[in-house]
Image (cartoon, rainbow over all chains, first blue to last red; front, top):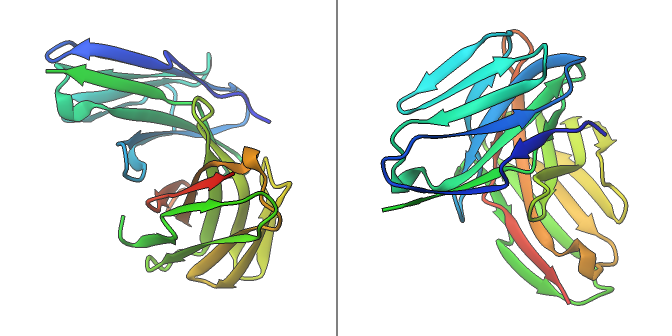
Length: 111
Length: 115
């Protein structure tokens, strides 16, 4: 069983704050790292897929970085808005092409 | 995502009952998955299928069985439900993209409560 950990488990921020959270994963047999956004009562939706060490991806106010040598990825949200409230899941994709999910970071943005 | 549907969306049942959760997809993907989600534990893989004749156990398959009736349909059964199978269950599909990466598309989830 692969160990994929996310921290913090939950986070409360004020509207306008910038925030970031972490996903750590095994540094061996790396193939890709996925980030998903999961809003309450909806299904998880893919945000980013990253494959190369040093990769940076950006979508609007959300960006992610990847360090495969030390086994971590950061997700950043600039100027959080209430609609960013969701659980953010990372998933480690090993060479066997299966995804192992972390426990998620639940973000709540207060207006 | 309306391309991946799950029925029922909510189910309350009693210990010992047999339950079937159904998943259908219109995405034309070969790969289908069943996960369960428990608070703080993320998504854990129960079973997966890479095509109609391929069924594989995931991390937590004990107490569950599956059937891949067609490319578009993948059912999960709890032969004799127990309370610790109370969870949110997700079906997902994927297609291997260029380079071998796969993005998974999730259904809306089935909330199962076993009393």
